[in-house]
Structure formats: structure tokens, C-alpha cells
Image (tube, rainbow, N blue to C red; front, side, top):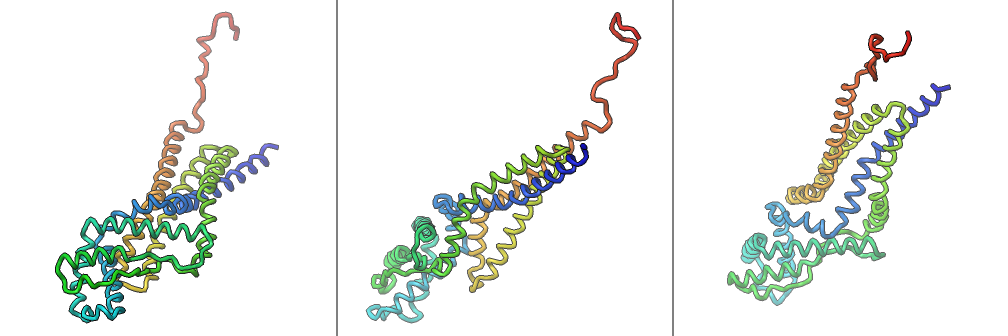
Amino acid sequence: MSPPPARLRSALSAALVALACLLAPCGALAAWAAYDLADTGRYVTTMAPLAADPAVRNAVADTVGAGIMDEVDAHVDVRPLRGADVRPYVHDAVHSFTRTAAFRLAWDAANRAVHDAVLRALHDGSEHDVTVDLAPVTAQVKRQLAVDHVPFANRIPVEHTEVPVLPVQELDRLRKGFRVLEVAGFWLPVTAVVLAVAGIGVATCRRRAVTATALGTALGGALLALAVMIGRRLTLADLPEEAHQPAAGAVYDALTATLREASWLLVALGLTVALATWLTGRRRRPGAPSSPTPDPARRPPGVRV
């Protein structure tokens, strides 16, 4: 009667371990989205170093410069500013501004404003595009142009230039997905741990179950790292402007840095546990006596053979 329960326990253990290894990378992804990407403070801290990235500075300068010239061309009272003569000044002023401490402050403030706006849109029922206002940056550039004595710089209009961040068509889908991630970010990692412990507990050979769990966790981490790499390639491939791909790549790498660390942590943890289990198993070779055989010549007094 013992073989059937042993087979049942082995099958149940294998199923629980496999499910735990499958949920481990999914739990890491959900936790990253719910607790790292959705946290405004962490988001701003993650994006802050990008203010010094040349590709990001160039992309911001091109966007802000184009916005300024659009506002200039849209106003009749600043007609002397039109034409190709003023554009190099604006271009140089914006690029120069991206190297200042004021830009770093504006960068942090803009990222905080964008993140807060996206979170509000995901939590409430607003039905409008998520945008960011470039007026503060335009005001900083205008002041620098005036300091550089650029003609008609004081007549540059500081208008509210709304740059779209998230279209309204995507809000409903992202809102549902974000709610799922908020729940999954906590319960998926907990469920993975519980299933792994249960699978090891019911196994007939716990050492083998531990090894399988460790190797499965390492494999899940490697697949998660591969998914991050593929996601980067697909994200950059969908961009309409090739000139901004380096900036988008820098932003993607910064946002997914924690996720990449988590994936390699799963790989390292799984391989370490598997190696430790294998090494401890070699010390206890099968067939080795668990206790020394008593010597007949050294029997206690009074014991007859």
C-alpha cells in the first residue's frame, strides 16, 4: 500500500514546485510594477540621473525648442522672431539650459508632475489625455536668452505647451491592468513561496525537491531577464522617431534596472541553493552506514553471546 501514496506525493510535489517556479518571475514583475514603478518618489529618484544623459538632453532640447518655435510662429506680435535666424539661438539656448542645475530641478519637477498625473488618471475616472506642461521650462529658456542678449528674447511667449504623455484611449485598459498589478504585486510572491514550501514538504525526497525548486527559480529568473531584453527591443522598434531611440533606450534601462536586478537575483539564489544542496548531498553518500557497527570483542561485561 505504500507505493501509491509515494507516487501521489511525488506528483503533487512536482506540480506545486513547478507552479511555484512559474509564479516566481511573474511575482517579481508584478511587485516591480506595483511597488517600484508606481511609487512617485522611487520613480523620480530613478529618472534623476537621466538629466545628465546626452541622448535624453538632446531629446528634451529638441522637444522644448520645437515647442518654443511653435509658440513663436503662432503669435503675430512676435513676428520679428520668425525665420531661420532665431532658431539657432533658441536651439543653442535650450541645449545650454539642459546642462544647468536649473534643468535638473526642472527635470525632477516635470517627472514628478507626470508621474502624479498618470497615477491620478489611473486611480480616478478621468477621461482626458495625460499631458505635461512645458511652460516652466520655456520660462527658464526665455530668461537665459535674455541674459545672452538675444534680440526679441523678452517677447517670446510663455504659453502652456501641453505635451501628451498618455492618450485617453489607453487609460481604461491601463487602469484595469494597474488594479490587477496592485493585488498581484503582493499575493503572487507570497503564493510562490507558500507553494514552494508545500511542494518540498510533501515530497518523498526533499533534497531532490529543493534542488528542483532552486533550478526552476533560476530558470524563471533567466526567462524574466530575457523578457526584459525582448521588451526593450520591441519598445524601441515601435518608436516613430529614430532620433529619440537612444533617449528612449536610456529611459527604459533606468526604469527596468530594479527588475533586471531582481531577475539576476533569482538566478543567483536558485543556483546557489542548488549547488549547496548538491554539495551537502555528496557528503552523505548512499549506502554509508548511519551508525558504527558494534565490535563483538568489546561487548559490555555480563552480555552473553
